[in-house]
Length: 631
Ligand code: COA
Ligand code: AMP
Image 1 (cartoon, protein in one colour):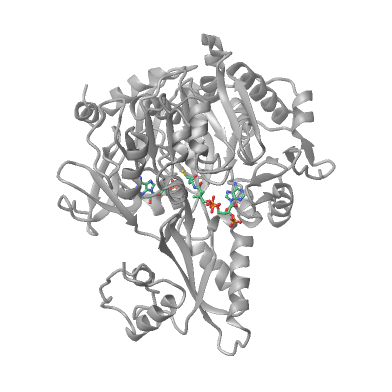
Image 2: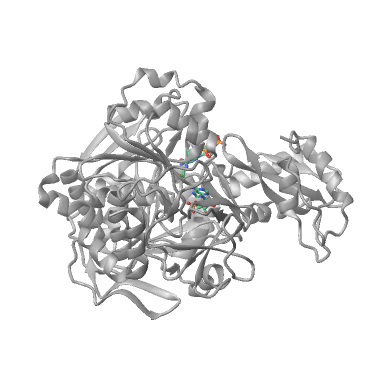
């Protein structure tokens, strides 16, 4: 069956479509309803059914004879080590880890926060939670202790699981001290911390609260998989919204397992036993879905890579991993390829490796510029597939579904709607726009299985953030257009979210940090175009009158403040002091106009601007730090 007929089936009879897909999963109890639409705008998939996600990702493969197959390959150029964990070993480790959690009093529905670098134990911890029905929340290691504390207070975990340290090419990241200060900052106090002691920097353990991973697992009684409702939460993953308060995206067990397994075959065209590599981090949604759950649910081998595309040790790092571990499909962010291209524009390093088994490159996480797509295609000689999705959906919304029917690639477009997603481009009044016209990209409800069911503990914010703009539709937060052939072009965000090296960040939360500095009267943070990272945050601050300290010192303090309060991942390094910020007559700061100026783009003078002469001042200030040049 071709793409169009599969897509039409998913739209015309979603229950039949997803019931068929659900055969990829082993259930303890069948569902009463495939699509439960009894409580709109909350839709549930497979209500009444029971399963265990860890059983489906691990145990059943051992039973089916995959026990000796590699489940995880940990490849860590930063520690110069490689480890293979088979499915049988993974079963043993997850059962022991789950047993250790149980011994600490963790029960079904309890939360466990995981703050770990790219080590296989992070995957074991996630699966171990799923095994006993505990809800994990993984926090990316590049976030500061304050961000971690915010998540602790929202998720209220019983137990924290952390590595003692992470290894970045230029430094050791002190996870344990960051964890300790997050617990001090947070109002909620987790009862215990399980610490994976790494030899590069073991952490000091707090007596009575902290336990070492190795000791806890050695003493643990292996725990079996418990049966949970398909609609029970599997995990919470926090993502940036427009405010400083991150949104806790909740993912269920049943719909998620079905969507993950279906996508491996139909979107990525990967078969059980193949090696699938998502070069991301377990702290991001790409890591949750395509380092951990989808490849393991599908019986593939997944790679946990603790390194970078460049500098560990050279721009041939990806090619080495692909050759050495026989990777069939790689999934990463365009930034990784821009980084490789910048250091090795003629792909000399590629000549040292044999990539004959490599089939496809998938890119996502940020807009993929055609130049990067074309370069990757040209050097690799395999299809390069851009696809579009977000933390909230958990898997591709628009993609070229290679397992169904490869469609012609149009550079700049993630191709067409994935079956299950009814994508509509609407204007401000909720009317569909003409093909080629830009509008808000929305998805008609219900969202397919695998997408967020709500925000943790906050149904009202879920409705207000995503479902209230246009009743019956989910607001993606992206703007773009669809062409005559149904190809989608995702152009920009419509909110204050920016995308830095495929990492999603809130300018609002950075502004909150700048505004707290005693010398700052007002501020704005915009995402300025960057050739490597897509966007980089750029701060504009107005100092309080009477401030006499040197601007350079204040700027340094502001940069340090954002790094400490949000984390190095924000890559916040540039601030410029200005006299005034441009605003509308009602006092709204014109961030979009300042972004156009910074990027050297033409812009229309906003009709509601209070004082247009401020824009010339902004132009001059930004030019003084190398921005605002016309392309
Ligand atoms: N723990 C602690 N700090 C971390 C971290 C982690 N897990 N991951 C990144 N950081 C830090 C980095 O050390 C860096 O700090 P610095 O300012 O002291 O140098 C900062 O956060 C920014 O990191 P990063 O975005 O990785 O930038 P980089 O300049 O170190 O590397 C690239 C640039 C392009 C190589 C890198 O961004 C990359 O590999 N991108 C691939 C995209 C990707 O994986 N996206 C994920 C979503 S699919
Ligand atoms: P995240 O939730 O971190 O995965 O970020 C999701 C956001 O990244 C989306 O809402 C888009 O703004 C952007 N994004 C992800 N993939 C793409 C893509 N293929 N093309 C354009 N933008 C993308």
